[in-house]
Amino acid sequence: MAGSISARLAALGIELPPVASPLANYVPAIRSGDLVWTAGQLPLVEGKLPIAGKVGTGAGQVSPDAARDLARTAMLNAISAVAAQVGSLDRVEQVVKVVGFVASDPTFTGQPGVVNGASEVIGQIFGDAGAHARSAVGVAVLPLDAPVEIELVVRVGTK
Image (cartoon, rainbow, N blue to C red; front, side, top):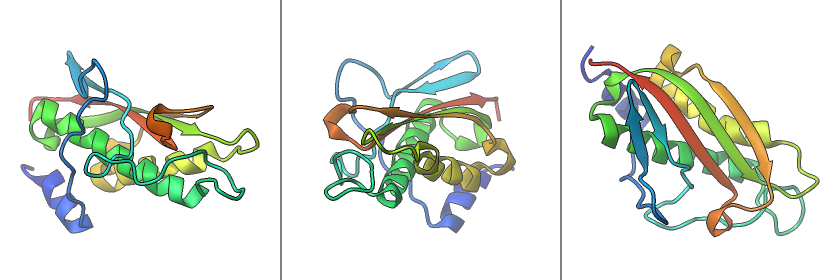
């Protein structure tokens, strides 16, 4: 049904952001056959990182709840990169894989909960086609001292 993803985005009150400009020598997304792979997407809002730092529960750290929201933002950036590559998001037949990197305090072990922010918005937008394999990885640091980075792989058809 044409326009169904656009309608779902509108019903959810989600407006996809413009595709984030690359920070180095790469493209935001690339298509290979029926797969679209995004570059790692940071939770940039209007070109800026709203919160920086390590995710954890200590003073001065990014809270897991805030990081979860940032993972959602990074996923919306990834979805924008996919849309720019394929035109209509109605062409997405399956979300294949989500990889979430979480810049973590060494004692923080809640990476899966943080990356749920990305996974949940995928399910809201794509429904059953949003079911995906996933990795949630704790890392020492990310570009710009971002708390999270998300990669997305989707399979597209000719709709």
